[in-house]
Image 1 (cartoon, helix red, strand yellow):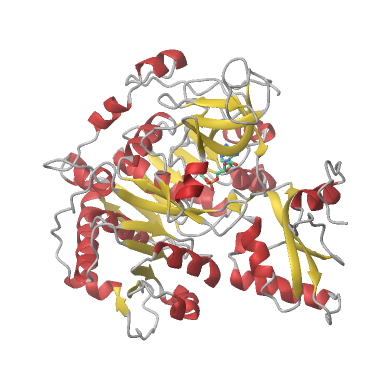
Image 2 (spheres, rainbow, N blue to C red):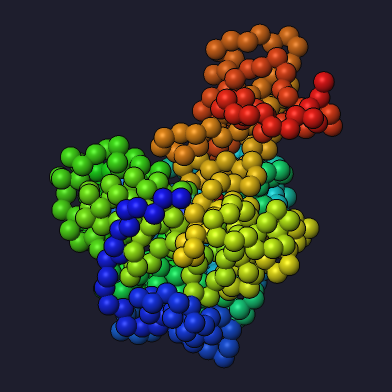
Length: 582
Ligand code: PRX
């Protein structure tokens, strides 16, 4: 654990509770009930995330404030006020009702980062349905697993992406309708179960009475990877908005005049919790850039929109470091006043670099798909210890537990990072996987699956994952998913997948395979298997490297020993090999 150098937080007076100038005081004075009182709630009772994000502002003087500045990747741009989004999301909720969608039904999105995805997600919530956003780079298997498991009735997608859905259409019995968003007006002929977004929206009423949802009604599900099995759907309820709202305000330090820029895609939880619900429940204007990572595009977005608060991820920050300071010099980035990072360990060098490059540090924070909102953070008014994730959010209790997850460990000792269960945005179920969900809770603690340490002053330091899950460029990838895709190739007999260290992406995926009889080792075969995997999986989950072995190390019960593959690859001690097959 290194404490030096300590970087001063950028102190700015923030007169509302909790006063994070005094962390202990903030913890004492914080109450989720107070946060709840800052929300509006539905008329006549109930709570709905979309109402808190859009409608309540559309009824006040904020109605003409720009909620969304959208910057297309082709240089085109659009703006939507809170009132515009109010009308569009009402229309979309009407569209869903006209298709027979009822409270609790699952509606999934699989689109590019265009304004329609925001309309669809919020409109679905207004209709009382459960929304499941999918990342646009997912391949057919990834889409199929999620739609099948959730039993989604409606999918919103585009002419470009629907071809992926056509490949798996026969295997999705619950899917009744596909809504095609064709913003670029490409020539596309709708098939039998497909309807046009533009046409339905045009004729839909702009009045809609939000379907009454309660605090504990299901609202949104994001699929996340574990060590074994297929990805599981972590489901959040409407009161999760309390967590989005409070943490966007106090951790991302959003103030009424801010222009906020979150680089995450709504296909992942950061892109919904902090790319939709957090900023908009606070009535903040935000910028969305359609394209992926690009140092020059990101800087030009910051300059053009005078971005003040920026939330991004360590791999991106490391790529910005690589792109260098010369490119920064071409833009005026003086509007920036506060920057945060999440998703992977933020190396101390990146924090120090950001101070040199932008005059501001990145504030690291920690959370998970399951936690729904930020749990541990470096705060705006406080000093940063580069390399540390910071301290628990007021209203959240975190601890380091021993191997059995029964006792708290003293400062300095490595153990299991756990959270006292009960914060509002905690996931309520893994869809259809009750046993797995229950197994994550021990003695009232939610066991996060991360290993960490706490120092004497209560700052948390990330150590690694407790399981085999790989974190590549901030995306969790379950080795089992990749192995399952690989063994579907006719040449592959068995596969074992691990993460290996990488300077930029933290980890990249390496696969070890053995071949079935009759197949010869060749570079062409490796290339073909890589292409095969890319078609089945999404880009981030594809192995960067595939190595062919005669056979893979297995336990006597036949389980591939990923731990051993990793130890051998990295030249580490092989540890206990007593269960290894002879
Ligand atoms: O291992 C931790 C890592 O990312 C995991 C959560 O990933 P996901 O569910 O995809 O959530 C993404 C939204 C944050 C964690 O279990 N992680 C997240 N933040 C950090 C981190 N590792 C180190 N430092 C962080 N700040």
